[in-house]
Structures are given as C-alpha cells and as structure tokens.
Length: 318
Length: 297
Image (cartoon, rainbow over all chains, first blue to last red; front, side, top):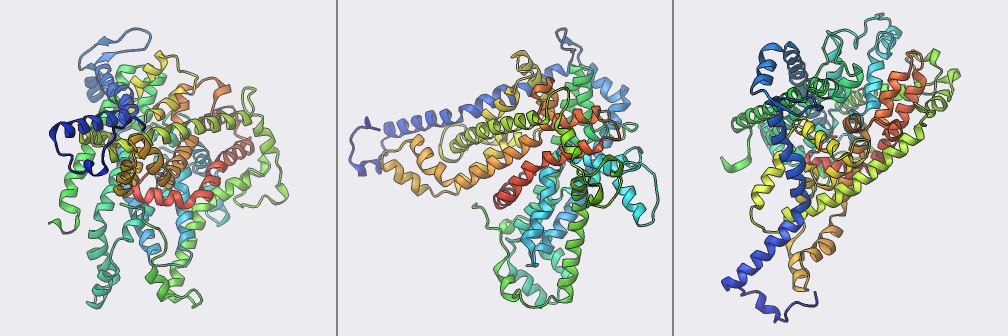
C-alpha cells in the first residue's frame, strides 16, 4: 500500500477519463480472476472436464485395465433395449421420488404452519424435528433402520407388545423394502420444514386478519393466502428434494448390503450405476448411466420450471 | 437478503402470555406435536438403550436397559475390525473432517468474494455455471473423477476428500457466502478503499470479520457432511487403517454375526455423538443457515 501514487482524495470521484477507467476495469478483471482461480481450476478439472470425459466414455467399452474402445451408441442401445435391470432401477428411483417428495412437503408444510402460530415451545419442537435431517443419511441410521424393519426387529416387537403379532420382515420383502426407505426419507422432513417456516414468517399477518374478517375459514385462508404466497418456496423445496432423491444411495446400500435386494426392490439408479462401475468395472456403461441420470435430472428440473411459470406466484410483477 | 431472525413472531407473544392456561385448540396442537416427536425419537432412544443391553435382550422394544445393563457392546465394539481399533476410525474421521472444513471455508469464501464484490468480465456467466452445478448429479462426474484421482495415485489417501473442497466445488457453500457477503453494506468497502485498501484488504479486514456467522455456518455444515460421508470413503479407501467411521460401520455389519447387535449399535450410537454435539451447540446457526439457502441436512 506504500507505493500508491499520491493523489488528492477528491480526484477519485470525477475519474471519468477513458484511459483511467480502462485501467481500473483491467485491475478489477485481474483481481476478479485471482479470487476466482481456485473455483475456476476446480470447475474445469473436476467438474466440467469430467462431465465431458464421461460423455466420451459413455460411447466406449472400458474396463480400466485396457484403454477405452469406441462402440458408438452401443451402451445406450443396451441400456434402453436390452437391460431390464436399468428399467427396474429407474422405476425404483422414480417410485421413491414420486411417493416421498410430496409426502415430505405435506408433513413439512403442515408442521411449519402449526409451529408458525406461536405454539408454546416452538423452538424446541423445531430443533427436535430438524435433527433427523442431519443424521438421516448416516450409516448409523441406516443400520438402525435395517434392524427396525427386520422380521424380529423393533417394529414387529413393538407391534407385538400391543397385541399385533407378525413376523413379516419389512426389509426382506420386495413389496415393502422400498417403503421403509420412503419412510426414512419422510422422517427427514425437518430441513424442508425450516425453509417453509422461514417463508411463512414473510407472509404479512394483516392478510390473514382481513381474510378472517371477511369470513374465510382456516382452510380457505391456507388455500388463498398461504399457498400462493408460499409457492416460490414450495417450488424451491420440491426442486431440491427431487434432485436429492434422484441421488439417494447410502441407505439403500447399507440396508441391502450393497445388492439392492430383495429382488432388486431397493436397487436405486445410483446403486446400479455403482455396481456396474465399481463392482463390474464396466466404466463405459456406468458413464452412460451417469449421463442418463444427468438427462433425467435436467428434464425434471426443466419440467418443474415450466410448471412453476404457471403455478408459482412471484408477487406484484404480473 | 439478510439472514432472517428466526424467533417466534412478536404478535403471537402479545396475545398469549405464557401464564394463561391452554385453550382446547392449543392443547390439541401440543398433543399432536408431542406425539409426533415421540414417534420420531423412539427409534433413536431405543438404539441408545439397546447399545447398553446384552445381546440376548436386544429384541425388547423398551428403552431402559434395566437389569440387562451392560457396557460390553462398547468394549467389544471398541476393538474395531481387522486389528484396527475403533478409536483410530474416529480419529481418521476427525482428521478428514477438520481438513475438509478448513479447505472448504477458505476456498468458498475466496470464491464468494469474487462473485459478490468484484466486477470482472464474464462474472455473470461463471456465476450461472456455478449455480448450475448446484443441481448437477454427482454421479455423472464420478467415474472420470475416480479415474483421474486413481491416475494421480490418490487411492488410499485423503486427497480425494480434501482437494475438491480446496477447489470450492461445493456450490452450496459458495452460494451461501455470496448471499451473506452481498448483504454487507458496500459503503464499508468504499471507506476502506479510500483508506488505501485493495481487494485483499477489503476481503480480510471488512468482509471476513463481518461474515463470521456465515463462515461458522459453512464450517458446521461441512463438518456434518464430511462426518456422515459414506460414498467417498467407499470408493477411495480400502486400507482398514485409513477407514473413516461410516466405512468402518459398514465393514462391521459384514463381520458381525446376527447375534452381536450390541457392539454394532454401540458404535453406531457413538458415531452419532459428534453430530449431536455440534447440533446442540450450534442449533441456531444451523437453522438460520438452512433457512437462507435451503442447504439440505
């Protein structure tokens, strides 16, 4: 800082001469890219680069040991026409997503509006409901879940204690195994609830009061005030939940011991990708699956954005 | 956008002094909330109880171990797997988490400063791309990343955990900090500039000190994610001496016979403690952080 040219302080204000302006712009560019350089390096080498490399690999057969062999659209053809496991994995992931995302929203919104009305101890409840979101993805909880729904697990024992006797293993049956994972996702509704709660705090109380004076009941007030004013938050939550649900992996892996069983009923798309890539070392095919996932996520996001243009209310601008 | 203060709205306080008895509706509401909290927490409490119970009594749905109380699950689990003690896994996890926290906070703060405060060419383009990576499924870059790290000889090292953090690839945290930095008044920058500060000076003397809550939020979330991370160790570690806790627990399942649940539950409960501690200590920062950016838990 010592070497700056001496300059009267007020000279910095009418500094509009083009040469000087160009010089500051140039300096801003340099500082900008200096600060941006770690991210930029990372973006190019371990994000954007790999996206392109995996696109390339998806057109090859590659088992790590030998160099990739170009096979054109073979992987994709195999994926779409000759691989029933791909379709079943896709179905499992979509079922998980379609069933759990709306239920999470309903729970989160219901509890948020309950806690928003100045319930006694609302900070404590908020903390209690939020905690599962922090630990729900951990291996420890997956282990607990596995035991919870086994034939001689906690759920059946608790049911037995109140007189309902069953030995059915919820984890072991293909009909219910995915259901236990959906329950686990719903158990983690707290993070969405906090976001809704923050959104609800922005809704002006006068709206509710005048609606109540006009004779609107609780349900009507929710439908005509809360829902439209909260719709941008709902959209955001649904979008992020969908993106996360596509990538669910940990619990399915632990609960099924990495197999996706019973009968592929918990073989999530990502788990299948992992198996092909890191168990079978079929890296070309796994890359094709990765690109399939990218397309699916992008299409879902685009669909949600299109839907939001009709359903989401963004204040006064229209 | 400033971080909204999340506390009970004042109008509600005015209407209901805490001394007044609950109305019927309020009572019902409390009942629903308590019931839900109990149902949600029963499995957790049960696991804690079961970790202190002998294996023969594990199927008891009650929580309190009572006469079955034993700490053998903990002593047995602490032995670890393949001759590596569980304490080692915990230390490994802490080491990885600490490295990730430092790398992530430093790199994301630098990146966020560029986006929030410097007017350089193509900033909007880079910012849009950064936001785009928020929704990028990790699995599409997984395989080339693995091949790259393997080529660099990073298998069985912690570099695949730390280097991506050092390069600020976790866009959520960049976004969180950009939001916070933008809320800091620009007049402060101007004043510092007149005093002869460049961007480095403004960054270190103005932005960083004022952004401490946001930096702390980022640090805490990074710690929790890193502590829970199962996928990265699954792919990059196969030497038991380097295992982090989640991977060690997974291997525990394989080596544990179906009757030895005590040790498995004991170590699982133990593995949740650091997250619980962080949660209790920094609850407010976590809640505010998620309310502003929608970081997933």
